[in-house]
Image (tube, rainbow, N blue to C red; front, side, top):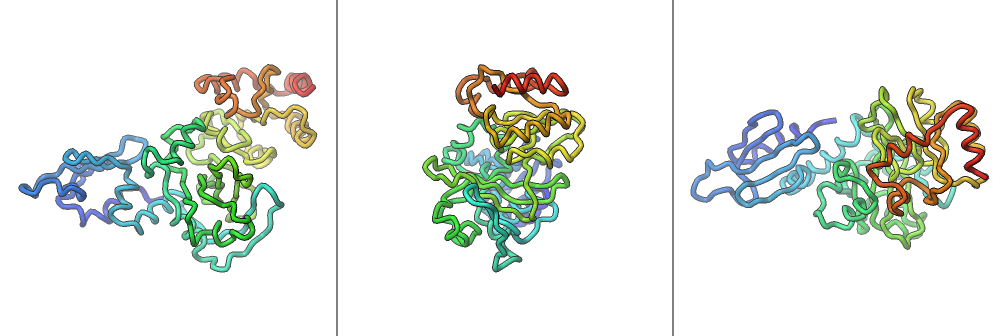
Length: 340
């Protein structure tokens, strides 16, 4: 992955009096307000990195935007390249499979394999680069997702015309709409696909999954530390409530278990009477997995609902999971008591 320094260097020739003050501090004349008509040596524009994500600020016109927004204003094509570089060290070029939650997956061969992924990314905007009152930012805040994660979540507008969702729009019966897009990678950082979530509660096609390889996706490898305790949940939104957390994107945790993580806690959704899920519970228990067993008094169906319903405070989520995690014979006893 190329970092922001390389992209800033590529537009530095357009920035009057540009200079690097330090590794994470660039200074130049503001390209938006001109900084000063009288003194062209004035340099009150800055790109700074605070340890989370780079941002632009001008002490003259007080423009304050993310680095992505800054780059987009200067060079939209370079902005798309910057977004693409954030996704993977070696981004692939085509999708091998597209599926949604209503029908079984089908292998679909795009007609323009070399540019499918690039076109799709070009249509998206990083959430961090949207206006602070944008509906996508508000939606994520309402789902208890902290803004520190906004640099790797994307927004796909409804009016996209050339992307994969539009090209296969017939298969989705016009239910694509605007989407929040979560890119997925494998453990090595290679881009594997996208999970696209509608923000419209009336759209019954909640998720559309774009897969680059014909393999099940896992979300959360970015920044994962396997030397520490790892949590594994079913849904993407639950994964933002716990540190060092993966989302299986299904009820099957086989791919995560295969990673051989020494300290792993699996958290399934709160569905004690689901006959479909019971065999998966039994398999994980027989495998000796450490599982979170839901207390009987909790009625919410997953961790996100627990926070929204006020059953568990967000700051107490990790402690709640740790206190209710069991393995071995004790886990089997707790499971039997929970599901009846």
